[in-house]
Length: 43
Image (cartoon, rainbow, N blue to C red; front, side):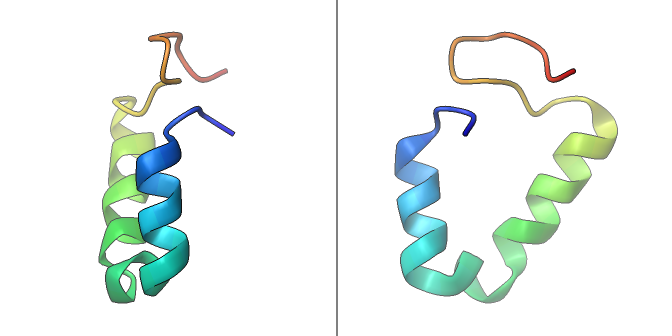
């Protein structure tokens, strides 16, 4: 959805590296650092 295809495939194939990438994404969302691949902010 965000345009980060490589990370999406990695998370799909590894189960989010046993949940670690899921936690990192959650932290990045809470801190406002996760953006679309083209640089736009999440709304």
